[in-house]
Image (cartoon, rainbow, N blue to C red; front, side, top):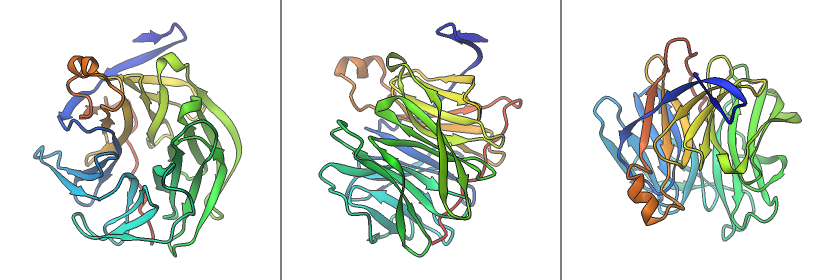
Amino acid sequence: MTSISGRNTVERLKAELALDARATLGECVRWDEREGLIYWVDIPGQRLHRYNPSTGHNDTMEIGQEIGCFALAETGGFITGLRSGYARIDTFGGTVQRLTSPDYDPAFVRFNDGRCDGAGRFWAGTMWEPRDRPAAHVYCLEADGRFSTKANPITLANGITFSPDNKTFTLADTPNHVLWTFDYDLDTATPSNRRVLRTFDPPQGRPDGACVDAEGNIYLAIFAGARVEKISPKGELLAVIDLPIPNITCCSFAGDDLQTLYITTARVRMSDEQLAQHPYAGGLFAIRLPSHHAPGVIEARYAG
């Protein structure tokens, strides 16, 4: 047990390298419980990755443009959020099929973070790349292809999660160092009652991608913070998972018992000197959580 900045006494854990991928910006890691495989993306590398934790083998699929996020689809394949908008991929290595998408300018905006709610809707947020004003949005894609704008405009959407009972929704605005929580109505796909769950001191990193466990605790990657934080539904810091590199981007529970956490990282914005000090930046990391930590939950799949 140790403390962070003298504020709270928390459990401290350590993740280990699983795959020396050296991705420029690894993100959106997801466990496919049907195949026993882990999917993740390298956004500027324009690739969807498929990692087999049993063999250590990693395959890649060229997308042809930046892929910010995706979700597994109930009927197979993926729903994705790309630079240009939504797309379907029927199978790994298959054709990327463009879909009707929000009307934004891809010169300045791209999809960044997303996942499905319990009804199989694909929620995905964009980022406003100049980062000088809140000009990004969160969209909800229905199974029939209709989509709508949700939540207030932000600068860079991250940290989208749904609690196991689908009554709570979280959203981070990374450049503004805040993680919000909302009440969520699954029947109407409506978030409400926005309040601050947790804020972050800029020198200690900023909130990025996240996932939840079976008790509703949030595992939040801290970019430029070399850690994943375990945060209670009330915003209390419960545990810290340390990594040997600074830029931590996303995490997901995996394995038959959902007790292993996989974590993506990035090499972006690191100097040659920093990369020499942190050669495994951009790697895929993992930690087998002690049994007193609740397991994860199976990710909802896109219903379309």
